[in-house]
View 1 (spheres, rainbow, N blue to C red):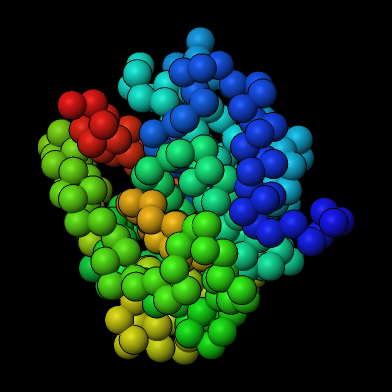
View 2: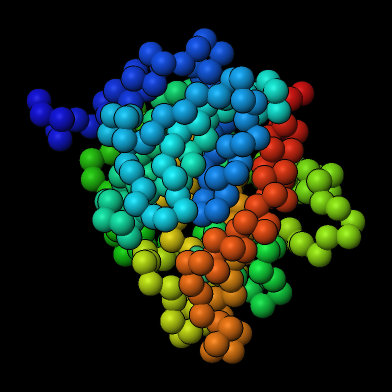
Length: 296
Ligand code: HPA
């Protein structure tokens, strides 16, 4: 059998076998996986330096690589909050880079085979809800996956029964208990002077790489989306298929609609800059939530 014929279950197992040869006992089975979005890679710096082990994506069998500026492309293992074994993806592959939609989500299956039970996904997103300011954080509670509804779907093809059922439900995809923990943690970490807000909202996935036209943004808003971005949803769908608990956050890096033409244009630099400014609060929120969930 050639490599190309391997199922994603077999490929995930090969990736895990490779990683496990390099990991100490304590990091062999991380409890949580975190995917760091654009400009949010600083989360990896919260890992205790003594426990930290890094892998370039290029070194991991079958792992998709990111070519985007600002998305480094490394897998970082270590202890979060001193005792929670975690694995972090710094940078991710996107559909618009030319990967297939299932390949984009392949790392989630690697996490499943590593025995992770919870994934935390973060991303930079455009705000569609007029009440959201740049720098606000949105806890996702649902999504619109237009590409998926039209058939560009990570679970298309023969079902891999090792991971989950043919027709997985997604009505409970965004774990309520984890969201409760996130809200509690936000109260603990946000300074009373801060204007930054934590919202709950709906994320719309767009293939990219173009940002939305104004008409497209208005359409997504009318359909019920609060934020729009080019990632996360394929990963969430794949995570729910294999029974992982999901928590997802968007950092609003620009307003995708409502602003006048000049201020309403999204650009990659703008996205990275807003990410840098708000990344610290986002980082604290993610770490505090994970500690709150696991350190009992
Ligand atoms: N649209 C799509 N993706 C994005 C945006 C946006 O406005 N901002 C950050 N990622």
